Structure formats: C-alpha cells, structure tokens
Length: 281
Ligand code: C5P
Image (tube, rainbow, N blue to C red; front, side, top):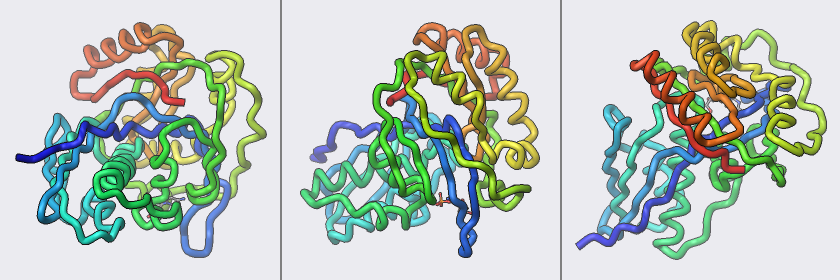
C-alpha cells in the first residue's frame, strides 16, 4: 500500500509588476518585480517507492510530459538522494502561461520530498538550475524580487486582496518574449511605500509596468483582449499580464466580487481559463 503525503499546493506565481532593468553577458535579464501568489494551483503528492516516477492528473494534465523534461522529476533528482518516490502532479494551472506553474511544481516537489526523505532543502543557487523563478516559489508569499530572481526582500503587511487569473489558452514561450524585447534597460521600481489598503496597493501597481507585456502582445495579440475583459469587470482595481504571459490578473477587494468576475469571464469566453482566489502575501 502506498502512503501518499497530504498534497502540497503549488500556487500560481503572479508578477504584479515586472521591470526589466538590464541584460547580462550570458543573455539573462535583470528584473525588478513585485511577486505574490494566488491561492489556486497544482497539487504535488509523494509516496515512498523503489524508484522515481511521475504521474500527472487533473484538468490541465493532458500533454504534460512525465519524463525528465518535467521540472518535477528534475527537482527530485536535484536532491541527489538516490531514493525513489512515486510523485503525483495534479495539474490545475495552464502550461507555459506566465504564472510559474512548472517552477511552483518543482518547488512544491522539493518541499514534499525533502520532508519525506528527511534531507535539507537545496541552497537557493542550486535551485536556480531549475529556473529563475525557483527561489521565489520556494517560499510563496509577497516579495520584491530582483537580480535574475534570486534577490528576495519580503514584503510584510500587505492588505487583503483577491485575484482573478485568466488565460486565453495560447502557450507563450518565455525565451521568445525576452528575445522580442525592444528595450532592456528600463528604470527599476521606486522604493516601496506602505500599503494601508487594497486601493493603495492597486494604485502603486497601476503606476508600474510589466516590461514584457508589449513583446508578449506582439507574440499573442489576444493578451490585449484578456486585459480588457478583466479590467471591464465590476470592482477590478487593476488588470495586467503576469510574467511573460499569456495569463493576466485582476485585483479585487473581496472574494465574492472576484468570484463573480471570474464567472462572468468564463460565461463570455468559455474557451478561456479563469480562476479566482486570495492573494497569498
Ligand atoms: O529560468 P527560466 O527557465 O524560467 O527562464 C526561461 C527563459 O527566460 C530563459 O531561457 C531566458 O531566455 C529568459 N529569462 C531571462 N532572464 C531572467 C529569467 C528568464 O532572460 N531573469
């Protein structure tokens, strides 16, 4: 009999802002981003086994590879214990969609397996071999993320907020978007002020940017329709694209207002994926 652990949530990572401030010799970009997580995501379950294996289930599971190209198995191997585990990935988030699904899955796998195997978590630098978003995904919360993604400053006292996430079903390649960037030396974010309430945070976010959005819109013009659809919902404080797209988010002051907004978008565009949940900050 398998003894699976209780599921570990791999929540959606959302870049409320994403400034591209430079480019390194090796082609990687310097970022300045306000990152939060939304309480919707994939679920990772692990059980002891003789060898490593991965099974993918869930509404977004079709087409997800179960070989070593999957970050979940690469995360398991990074722990380098030689032990086996039967891993289940219950996929709820769309793939290649700018909300860190693969990175969040890998981070949740590291947490679940380190606990089951009784081994320490890898150093931040080592996790970056799996992706620049790994460090932030290791500790879902509110962060100012800089460097390539490894410089993390926690943000405390964030107001309660709810979020709607909408994806139009068009996978967007992150390297393609970075490659299509017109300008790579944009100004960083200013010093972060206090955010006494949701409106103050939304106003700050609205004044900042996602520097990847113009390039992503060139690759997938439907992103403009997604932002407009979210912005038009009742109670939306601010709407923007996350990461390299195509998923876009809206911020709201209450759970029911966000849920109604997600329902409206689903009804109007049944081919789009929409979800709502609390901001984890
Ligand atoms: O690290 P990750 O695999 O998520 O990055 C995907 C791609 O995004 C990289 O191959 C690179 O083209 C681009 N990227 C970047 N600078 C970053 C993070 C990602 O140029 N800081």
